[in-house]
Image 1: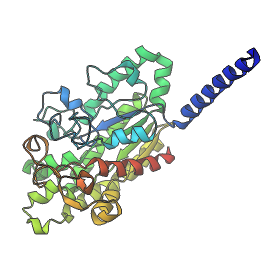
Image 2: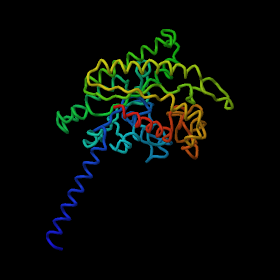
Image 3: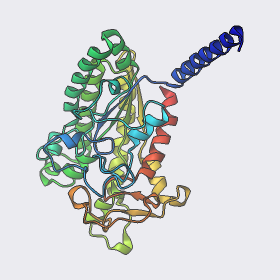
Length: 351
């Protein structure tokens, strides 16, 4: 081969590589993704805590490479969204002692299954209260600075997409379950208490450098299989609880304008409200649109009350998880999470 032809081929390969690399970089709207909240996002932090709120055993992870600590049959919306954004295929838990430095620059997960905004929600579980997840965020920032340098770390944190999803446990395991909570506060007052905690948390991570934040509202809590079962509804009459769904909507109606107020108060910030209620209700009311068949019980065990340690290796599971909205009596299947993640990706145009 003539030298000129060889040089031409080599230059073509170099320029093609550069173009593809630049294209891949410009495809990424955010340099990293960070998650705070509860089991709907936790990819395994609780594995490294002294708590019974774990999912690192079968049948969790049934359609994944084994149990990983995710409360589902497979990936969570946190993993799926990161993949849709071309950042990584799965998001590692920050508490994993084997977390590599390479993972830090594209994002990690601080969420803890069973978490909430109120101390009573986590008082006996040993999981990480949402506000305390900021302590691990501080540790993450220090470690990131040590890997990529202070200036680049600052840019990553400012440009990172932050997703926050919590509050359901505060109602399910606190307000609805503990008579003392209901005696002290009515539901409106309890919502206001939670929203003050939301505001305090968002200010804390803003002060640490975060600028682009998506905050999820409450799902239709009254449609969770465990909540339906708690009302002793018969298998032939398993309908959503309208009062609890109304509570979720009332909370959401206050959260959305609060985020607008915070955006106006925090210079350079962008807050986006994630509506979980309507998409999940649509899956439940119109399952055929999504390929679902079963909407009011989980795939694990009877599907009426099993979750966490009650969904275990002795539990039978459904044959086709893609036909179920819920994996256990609380948590969605990977199929349901995929629809949530797709909705969230479309919402990110606002950021």
